[in-house]
View 1 (cartoon, rainbow, N blue to C red):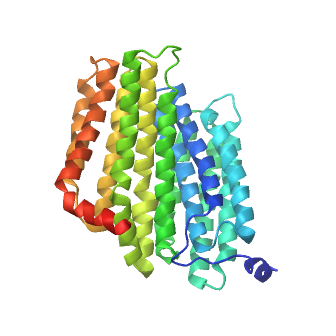
View 2: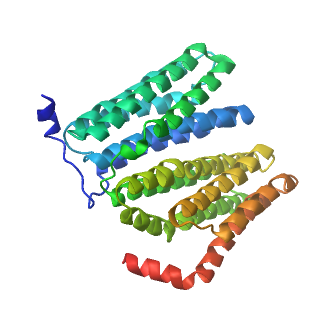
View 3: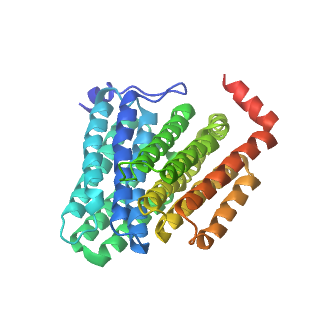
Length: 389
């Protein structure tokens, strides 16, 4: 029976690319991260930040799990197609429950835990089938099943306890889940297609940036957009374009090449570090920057929380880039490090400025960074982009 089911799975190779079903799955995931923003909007403060990071980590690593699975077998064929649809339904209910996951008078936390259990257990069950006769891969999947079981118990415990303790149970769940990746020797995973893997993470990043544009665009409730509103909205759009540029102009291409050249255990280790882990502060940075811009525009700049979220999100995004380059090519980009430091320094100094200035400054910093890199790395950039065509 299992052999018959496995026969309908189509293994991938190095030429495998992203399927349309995976893109559909990504849209459900982006709905989830959008609702993480809504969760933090309800009660702006330090606790909301922790709750947002925890829920974002839960859905992020659930999404990553299916990216690895889709690299083992084609996501739109046989059993894996069914599993993706089931996981999509589970992630949809995870997303719906996120804004109320920490509410005392709601069962959303338990709905999230049950739905997420469906997502993770479906993934591991199908991965066991897809592993076939690969004993090392089967052993690591079984190891992750044990880790995921502990993680889900902690998630359910937090949902049952509720109140202030819930978030700490969920922090423990995330910590166990990610520490477990190392304890079960994650280098035994397989990465058949470097191009598919890099493309998956690039696409989710650009979808998240696109969603941030939508969020900023809907942040004003005025029927008539004033000149100040228009400038602030354009600055928000400029920030989103710069986030796209900083990743997709050359960084994504260089990183994919490095991943393609790596083989065996080194390729798996590089994929785990550079993409599964290091992309998390990038995506988180986009979420927080979007939240910050929304709060600033909606409150006409009269909110410290909006500035901290916007600037802090951009710092997180840039730090993710610094780690990405360090892991891939062993060096640091001085200009991006400088931009991150400047943004950190500016956070407590700009409280008395109006809305336009608070959004225009980070936009100007990012635009200056992009212009500087175009000029300073002209030849290297041209060589990389020419080789893409």
